[in-house]
Length: 123
Image (cartoon, rainbow, N blue to C red; front, side, top):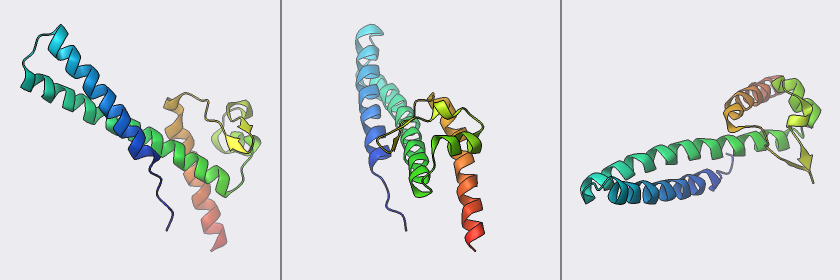
């Protein structure tokens, strides 16, 4: 069983905390809402930002895990994903995800298909 990374959880928690505090103070000071309504609205925003940040962190960890597992180069990543090799800089043997986060699900999907094909070939 693969070791689970705490990064997505911590990243999500920090994002949720920051968004809760920001929305809470905006609701209280700018919109002059009462305390209960401000807490509920801030809580909803915090949950949303936790989910968003968690899945971004999870995608980052999974992309890097697959790249390191199969020792993929920037050329390999370009071939698998259909993007340019310059989109995947590797410095000091570490992949730098410089692409906008909106591309990460597509990259992750391509890499998971690649991993599945490789696992099927082993069988």
